[in-house]
Image 1 (cartoon, one colour):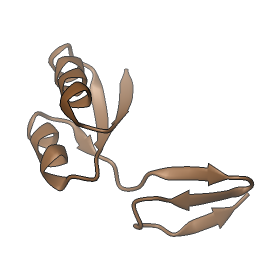
Image 2: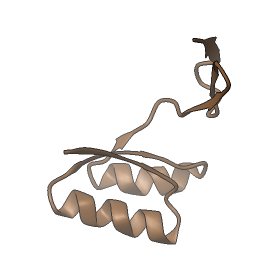
Image 3: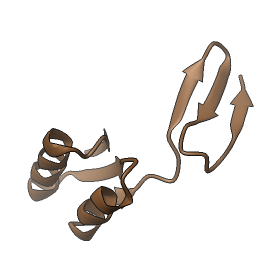
Image 4: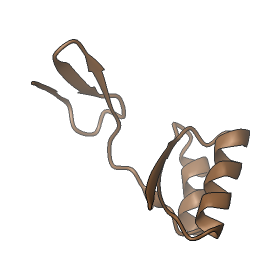
Length: 70
């Protein structure tokens, strides 16, 4: 199962670590690059972008890919 984890603070980091340990694939995102690097070192994949919706417009809140209108 592929699971995305957004937020790798105390709770999110522990949840991601346990999911990885139990054999699940995880894609992770956090504003803190060090938090993501720790989970990536434990075999998680780093998310390239994180989109949020506002009406009909999707915006990449990571700033990596811009926005689009649907």
